[in-house]
Image (spheres, rainbow, N blue to C red):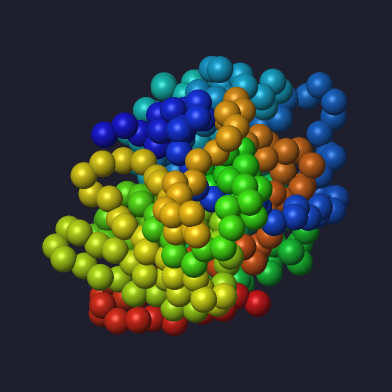
Length: 329
């Protein structure tokens, strides 16, 4: 099975994407970080979590390929020393810390990259309280109530924070969003993507975020209720939107990739981008821009809406019943 990073490279050349236009960015005036770096000085980044292959990818991007000149991934903390040393070797990351707090005062931005979302917010909190811009890899968190409290804290202290699925945050997704008005009326949506209800890293949360976030961004964040139907390893989900649209998610377990179809007056249409993906991809560019300027690429509400849907889906996995989705204010 190809990695998600390899899939993104391929889709960037014109294959399939599904998602939508991100919400209007906001600028947080954080006097402790935004605009603090002197021109020409290296920008130091730290990362918490090394079990995920993404950590090596970040090291390759910043330190080996040097896609963002002046930006360096300097510190890594790993769940085990073996994970950390592997990331250091393959990502050319020079420093390992035994305690993430050792990075305080040494970094200008933070990436949190645990496999299980339940560990993300606790790891990020002391850095956000110190005004360090923070990108939290998908999913943002494991419980929407914890996410609301965390983002409220981030707003109060004025620290920019964001999180998103890499399948969501692409030029192709923005292009698909722009195409939708020209496709006419539609109410039925079918979307395919890999997911594992039994993943040790949060079940539906772990890969389900890559199908849920594009779905919400493309068709609206107000999902009223969800239901999982499951037969052994096979599973589908139904989503009822507030405007009456009905979406069916089909969770792949034999193949990779993401595809979305709508039923319009002219028949069933597969949604495809009409642009090639930029390099570096949009998600990485927007992360770096937030680190430098404090400008968040999406609203906090949109982040939490996806977590609310995932949490409802998780409950339905256990019961098979319809579950109402918590409506984020």
